Image 1: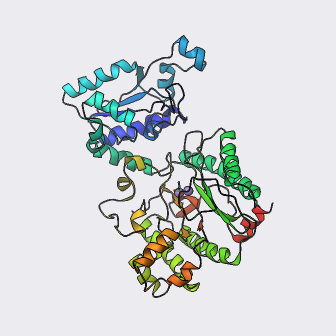
Image 2: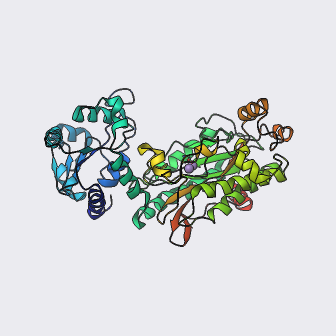
Image 3: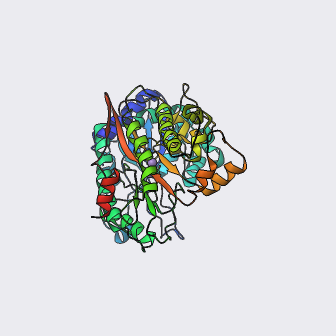
Length: 462
Ligand code: GLY
Ligand code: MN
Ligand code: MN
């Protein structure tokens, strides 16, 4: 946890902008894998972590925006629990660690909410991604669980997003702690992968390394010779001589901030000339766009620059044709680069996606495009100092998409299908780093992880 002052100040700022009403923050509970005593790995709700910090199940918090008081609700463990779970912090100790006004038993939460409702006070709550928390809100506020997310306090969502969007120095330090683990993961994976191995051997070593550092994955590890499947969670392929691998993975810091890194590397330690050509295009797109980051620019424009670099590189190789600006405006590059350039990162790897992507990455000035490809850009709006993003361009040869576009004669002015089909089994390339927008530009976070062709080959052959 951070110091109690951090949580106190975060709640004070939030109460200040909300001005009035109660802010209800349900924490997460254990989720049974098959029965209650055998749960999945516990992950606390991210907004609860941000304002309260405690990463144990069975808690809720209420911030009174009028008085500034904030209480933690939950129950002390009795000796029966302690026999199974070991010594536990008391609720009073938890309240103190988080700089809260005090702690109260969970049974009093309903009374506090009822009293506020009877007095005509507003109860603000955020979008809930867990059904168990929707049910809690149903019980406390009488809103049917299925309607909970359509009745959120938009004012609270917007204020939380604006606050969590800007990362402080101690938050950036956390992200860099997670990146420190990622650095070692990439060293390990590049060194370990060899022709004849099954993907899951490396996948297991990656997760094992993260767990061995006292961390947990910030999202399920993507590791495959089929990098053209963007979020490939199957790991049963044999890695063959001549294949390239995409490893997209992240860890969590002690305060649960994420890292999110992707590297593409050759199974046999040496890129083929075809692989190198595509890799260099993606690398150019990543390096040029990283260099653009500064406050005041719009992330959508940076994304479109990446699209142009990729389209231009593919035109040089004969996969695309025609005017590059027109091709990108028409969305033809999305055959190869069908996702957004990146996303905001923080306590969530896609930060605050649970609160609503459009609240995080779009606003009244920037509306989401409906064009295939650009529509997947998670953050389009103006950059501010303190934003943390991933920058992750990619180039993929997705057989199903190629077949579909060809059958529809889509963008035939810009795509040379005959050439594209010769790369049907190529796979994909993605390169991803995490950066902080600073007052005068940007800082790529973490220690540099091998990225040029030469660096990657060196790490693979180490
Ligand atoms: N978590 C996958 C990605 O956004 O890079
Ligand atoms: Mn990633
Ligand atoms: Mn990412």
